Length: 393
Ligand code: AMP
Image (tube, rainbow, N blue to C red; front, side, top):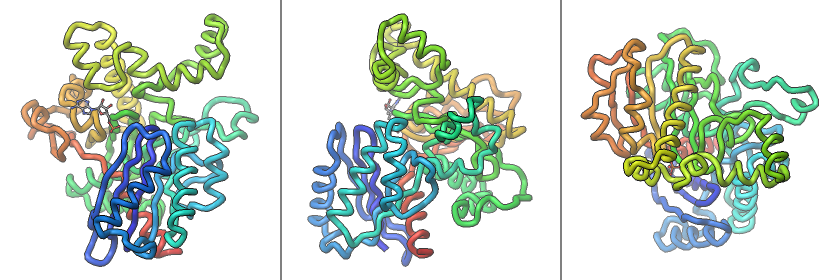
C-alpha cells in the first residue's frame, strides 16, 4: 500500500513516500522544498520527481495521501480529509495562520491532481485527546470557552513517535504497544510498571510533553502553536495583559501586535540576532548578551515545563530529545539536564557530545532516568495511522 505523507510547514514542504503493509514499512522516497510561499508548484514538482524515479507512474499507483493537519475547529483524530476537514481548518485559520491555510491548499491540490488517491488527515492535536479537563482548560468566561478556546497541544505525531520509540529502547513492549495502538484502542486501563517520560521536541517550533505509560498528560503548547516555549520567531507563553498594554503604549492595533508576536518574537525577538539556534549560539559565544539570554530563556522554559510534568506524573523514568535543536545540540541537552542528580538524571558527557542527529542513549550507566536522543519521524506515525484508517474504512 503506497502512502505519501505531505508535511506542509509554514515555510517548507516535505514529503515521504512509504510502502506500508506486505513486507513491512519501506521508505521509497523523500524530499522537500524550503522558503515555500505557494504549495501547488512544489506538489507538481514532487509528482514529477516521483514519476521520473518510477515510484508514481500512474495515478493509480498511490493509495493515499496523509496530511499532518494542525488545528481543526471541533475536529481532531484521524479522519477523511474531506469538506468537513476543510471547514474545520477554516474555522481556526486565525489561530494557526501559518499552518491551516497551507493544509487547505495542499488538500485541495491533491484532490484536483490525484482524485483517485484517498486523502486522510491526522490532526496534531489527536495525541492530547485524553488530557484531563483540569489541564486543558483556561479560566475564562463560558462565552470564550464556547469559541473553543482551551489548551489543545501540538507536535502530536512527533511526541507519539518518541513515546513509542523510547518504550522500545527501554525494552517496554507493553508501553510501546499501548502507544502504537492508542488511536485504535484508546488508553484503556494500564497496570504495568510506570513509564513516565518527558518528551522534548526542540526545533524551529518547540514543545515539551509529559507522557505517562504512552499517553500524553499535557503539553506546553496551548490554544495555538504560539504558546509554551519560545519558538524561532513566535513568542511562546505571554501574560494576556501584555497585549492590550503594548497596544496602548506603542500605539499599535491588535493585528500589528499579533504580527510582531508571530514574526518578530521568540528566539529572534529576544536575541536580536536570528531565528536559528546555531546563529544565536555563535553570537552568544562571541559575547552577545542578548543571544546568551535567548538561549538561557529557552533552557529555562524547557525545564519549567519538564518540571511541571514530573510533578504531575509523580516521578520520572525517561527524558527524550527530538527535532533539529534536540537532536543536534549537546550543549543544550546537558544544560537542560544539569543539576538533576537527585532526581536520578545523570548525562554521560562523552555519549552526549558524540550524539548529533542520530539515535542514542546519552545517560550515564548509573543514571536511574534514561535519557535518549530520538530523530523525529512524524511521517511514519502518519503513514501507520493512514494505513489503519484505510483498512478500517
Ligand atoms: P526543525 O524545526 O526540527 O527542522 O529544527 C530546525 C532548527 O534546528 C533550526 O532552527 C536550528 O536552530 C536547529 N538546529 C539544526 N542543527 C543544529 C545544530 N547543529 N545545533 C543547534 N541547533 C541546530
